[in-house]
Image (tube, rainbow, N blue to C red; front, side, top):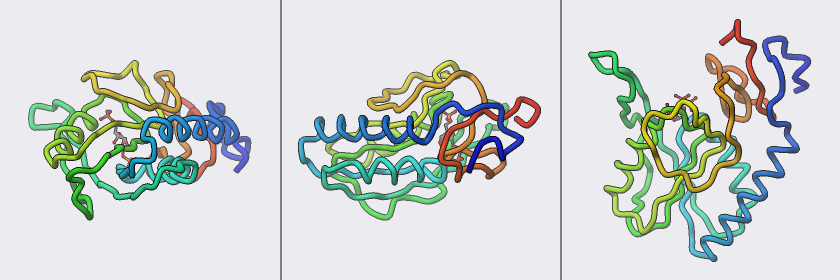
Length: 181
Ligand code: PRP
């Protein structure tokens, strides 16, 4: 979809071509690092689905895919960062080389929770790959091994990222006009 046809969008941040090219680079890096060791990609629903499938298509290392669904909310005191698993993995990750795939890391609360949770299931290794890193919003530091792009502190949509569940299907990443976000 042409972004000019979507009036709620301010500008394109990353085009389809830029995304494709960067994902290819990242896939090659992952292939080099894992050296043919089978990999388990774990996607966090829903946003990461688009990135995970695009990435997986360029990775040559044999891989399996599983998904986690989470919900996050504030606790009674209003503190953010309470995360719970709403849909668990279908299979065990014990002894496996796991790459957790996110669409975006903001505060880092979600990632911290997921890494603690998954580490408790005894994988052989556990690393993180995120499509976008909005580092300026970080509250808890979390180890990110692979990132496609770092982004400014703006509300972005597309390539899996939503605003009120819309725009996930855009092939590019765009900044939403401030009055919409
Ligand atoms: C996004 C993203 C992470 C989380 C990151 O999910 O997929 O799970 O937010 O935020 P944090 O670093 O501040 O914890 P979102 O709640 O937008 O769900 P979605 O993927 O279904 O859109």
